[in-house]
Length: 304
Length: 118
Image 1 (cartoon, rainbow over the protein chains, first blue to last red):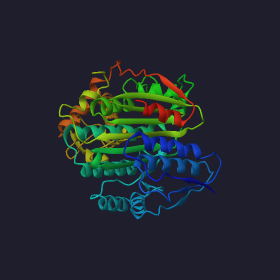
Image 2: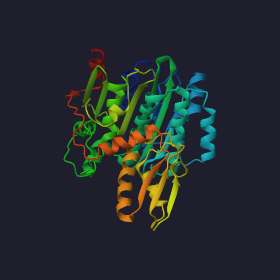
Image 3: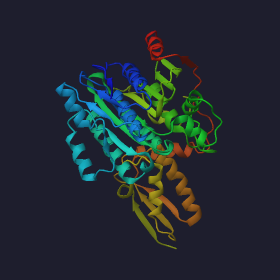
Image 4: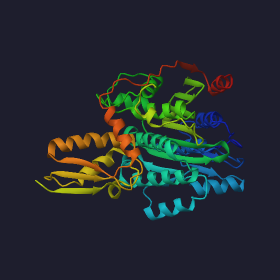
C-alpha cells in the first residue's frame, strides 16, 4: 500500500488547504492502491476533507483500490471525523429516520455531516430531502438571517443542484463547517463525474480544453442548447459570493483551477498532470454581512 | 371544467426545494381537466433558482396544454422574488462577462508562489 501522508494541519486561510488537496491528488498515482495516513494530523479543513473523500471514492469507482485509512492519533480530530462520517460519507440511501437522528445530534455543533449521493439518483426525493435537512441544520448553526440567509441558500442550492444535472455518473459529496472565529461558512461540493469539459463535449459544444470549458462555465454558458434561461448556477453564485458578500470561491475541474476573491481572479492550467476527475468547488461564505448587500441584485445575472 | 384543486407544495417537495425535477413532481400531482390549480406555498421557506425556472416553464406548459390556470398562493416574499427573477430572465441575453487570462503553470508550487505574491 502506498501511504499518502496527510498534513499535520491545514491553516486558516482559504487557499492553502486547496493547494494541499492538489498535492494529495498529485501523489495519488493512477492504478496504485494507497492508504490515507492521518496519524500525524491534528486539524484538517472541511474543504480539504471533502476533496480527498471524493478522490478516494473515484479511485474505488474505477475499481483501482480500496481505501485504507490510518486514523489520527489526535483524539479531537478522530472524534470530528467520526462525527461527520469521513471518508465514507452519510448516504442518501440510508433511512430518513437515521438521517434525521444524525442531523439532530449535530445541532449544537458547527458542522454538518459529509453527505454522499449517487449522481444518477441526485434528483430523487431522498437526496432532495437530505440536502434540505443539511441546509436547514447549517442555517440553525450559523444564525444567518435576511439577505445573508437567502444568499447562502441560493448559492448552496444552485451549486449542489448542478451535480445532478451535469456530472452524468459517479458520486456527489457536500461538506460544510461553520467557523465562528473566522466569521464564515466553509462549504465544499465535489463530484466524481465527467467534469466540465466532457459535459460540454457531450452536449455538442466545440471546446477542446479544461481551461476553455471553465471559462464557458464561469460565463454562464449552459450545456443545454438554446437554453437561455439556464447556466446561471455558477456565474450568479460566484458573483453573489465574491462581489456581493466579499467571500471566496474556488473551482477545479480537469487540469484547470480558479481562485477568486474580491482582490483576485486567477485561472491556472496545470501542466504536471494534476487533475480533478469531476468537479470540485470550495467556498468561503462570510456570515457578517454588509448591511447594503441584497441577494436579488446578483441573482438576475447582470453586471451591476 | 369548473372545479379546482389545491396542492400543498411542502408536502410534495419539502420546505426548500432545490431541484428542477421537483417542479415537475408538483404538476404530476395536479388532476387534468380542472379549471384552476392552486399551488399552496405555505411553509415553503425558499426555492432555488433552478426550481423556480422549471416551475415557470412547467406552469406555462401546463396552462397551455391543459387549459388550466395555475395560481400561486401563500408564497413568502423571498419565494415571490425568486419567481420574479426567473420570469425577468426568460428572454435575457446579457450575462456577466468573465474574461480573466488563463495562466499556465508547471506545478502546484508555482501556483502557491503566484498566490503568495499578491
